[in-house]
Every structure is written in C-alpha cells, then in structure tokens.
Length: 237
Image (cartoon, rainbow, N blue to C red):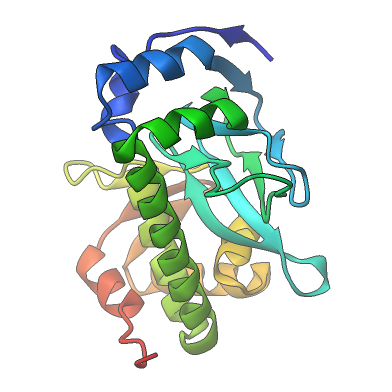
C-alpha cells in the first residue's frame, strides 16, 4: 500500500467532497495529519465489525459498500466514488463499522486518523455540519433502499440499478456507453435478488431495445423508458 502526502488546499477532489466549504485553517490542519494511500482491486478498506480508526476521502476509483444480510448474503448499499467519504461517525469512541467497503477497481484515498479528524471538526462548524448532513443523507439512502426492497419489482430494481451504475461510472450523453467493474452477482447484491433473475431482466431489456450489453459494457438505447420502469412512487411513511 503506497503512502504519499498532498495538500488539501490545492486538491481538485476537495471541490466535490465535504471539505469544499472549509476554510484554509481547517484544510491546513487536515493536510498536516492525512496520508494518501492506495488500495488494490478486490481488497477491503474495512470490514463490518472492525473498530472505526479513520476517515477515508476517496480520490480515485470505486468501492462497494455492503453489509451482511439474510443467511450472510451481502447487500450492497451504495457504490463509493471520487469525492465520497467513508468511515465517518458522529462519535466513534468504541464504535465499529456497520458495513464493509471493498475496492471494485484500484483505489486512491486520503486517510485521516479519526481522533484527529474529530478534533479538527469540533473546531470547525462548517465541517461538523457537513458530517451531520452526511449522516442525514445516509439515513435517507437506507430508507429508500428498504422501501425499494419491499415494494419494487425485480424489473424495476434492475432498471434502477443500471441507471445508478451509469451515473456512477460516468455515462455521457454524447456517447451513451459505460464500462463497469460490476458482475451480475454484484448487481444482484445491489438490488436484493439472484444473479439468474438479473441476467433474465437484462436479456429482456436487450430484447425490448432498451440497452445493449456486452460483457461488462452497457450501451443505452432508451434512457427515457428505463427511467419510466425504474420510477416508483413509494407509499407514505
């Protein structure tokens, strides 16, 4: 695992992370203690049940964030990408990770020991509020995930997953194609179904002219229809 140091103030990734609105003093404090590390594809950044030791700012690459579900089947909560933050807690004293994070590609990230990050954020109202907002976003994500698993059909869930993958892996309108580091089983773990069901739905979408799929490359033909399939009005809660 290679380790280097960089300045947060001049980092372009900062513009799409929770550090975007922080003042120079806060950024200098984080720069002083953080390390830039690399993680090889397939390796774990942390594992469910591990003690929380640090905050990780993703600079490059993709990770799947998952937890153990029924019968120890993984359930992928989200895909973390450039600008995302993992490992944060409002209070990490004696806390453990409630999920695991595994590299889908080679990953580069900045690591700040939690005790130091907590001390810095306690001195910065802006950073503290950003961390709180992250928690709110995570709770909303879990709520939507639970509703989707309970109420959406497999067809709707797979359509939504493909749209999410397109957004995450930078699908451009000018050339509607994207390469993913996601296998059929990963998609199944993302939507809470089986690999066989995912393969069947993808074949159906191809027959209907909605997508073209070769190995791990998707090409879109009808984004509007995919959105219509994926859209679902959740019941009031």
